Length: 285
Image 1 (cartoon, rainbow, N blue to C red):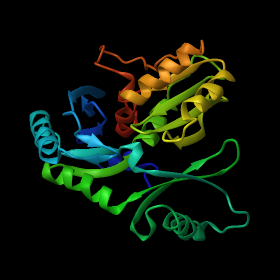
Image 2: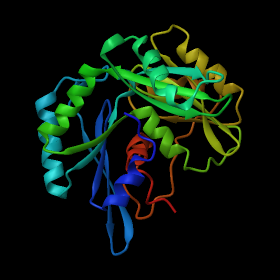
Image 3: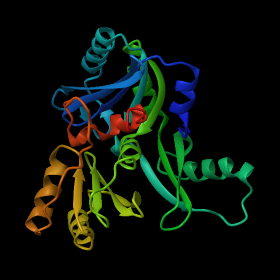
């Protein structure tokens, strides 16, 4: 599941249209990236998800969502898919770089760490380098059963699945291409029951921490973290995002939603960042 450079390799081979899909608590969103008249074109679209259709990272209304996805792919003439796994379905670990480890032993070491996580031997994993505050790896794992559900969704919709990625990682990938207007700001990415904090450092969004929101002090920790930064942004939708934005506002912190400068005035919302990250940002100036 390593995804570094995957889109660059895809577009080097050919330039067929690509659909990037993210299913959130309330909406199914995607970006379609193709090339017309010698330039990249990005289309953003969204449809409502039936109430209860996605719970804790699991699809509960599988046939209806598969049918909607199949029809959408057919209408737009797209088969190639990149899909975001709900952040709630993924487990995150931050691992310091072992001193003296040979590069060819790194994969086996990362796999061993993944197998010690909550999904045990039934883990699928991906690792991403982080450099701040110290070099290391951000290890994401999900159960094989969950991945099979999402792979089956693509197959039922008659799409060609190219990659699965954690929604928070995909959104972070897009955000890192966005020039934050306020140095020293922080940003919260919310899921259904987890929140990830990023902070601006040297012109880039750097990872800070991630936690499940069943902890009694989760919202309080977010407010305390935001108070030490120059500005705060909230990215997400649903009850948790609303609760967090309300708590920040009550603390006098005035949260904002990050928004890129998109040509053509597309139907962009803050929850669209994961599909932008999956699309690879080839459209970005």
